Amino acid sequence: MARLFLAISLPANIKEQLKGIQEDLAQSRAQVRWVRPEGIHLTIKFLGEVPEEKISEIISQIEKVLQKLKPGKLHFKIKGLGVFPNPRSPRVVWAGLEGDLATLARLKRQIEEAFVPLGFPMETRAFVPHLTLGRIKSSKRRQALMEKINTYQEKEWSLPEPIEVEELVLYESKLHPEGAIYIPRKRFPL
Image: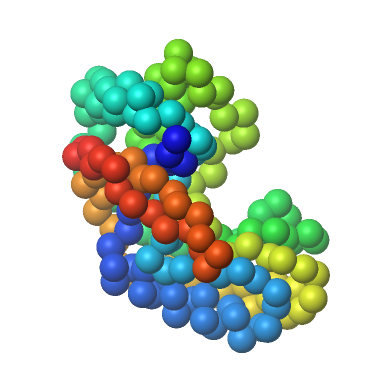
């Protein structure tokens, strides 16, 4: 069995800048488990535990979707910080995206539909492209964290560098006490 997900990886310089944002937010001393910067990514589809013999079918379906859709390179910019599910009871701190979101949504929908025959249910929640920066563990100092996030929202924060996405990556996630390690299993050029 392999714990798999399909995602868009980010360039190292973008991850480094997001690390700086995490460090700034961490000054709130809120109880947040921050995602290791090297692990920040944009999830397209979480598959969970998959038998090894099913992985070739998954790869084939992804290739079919990309051949049919031909999305080409995707361009994004990281803009805005927020929380899920809402500011009153936040559980996840995220950075938002702007750019080729319509193409990304079509790609996501096509992937979802292609995986149904393989036994993976369609995601019922609306697709909100985001980068998870941290998971809030308790309400301790949560207000201080929200005040920090609000300062970014007030100045309409964004990273100046655009991101050009040239591939999707099928990752295997290996869980460790210090956090998950993501191992690329297959890369799919766009």
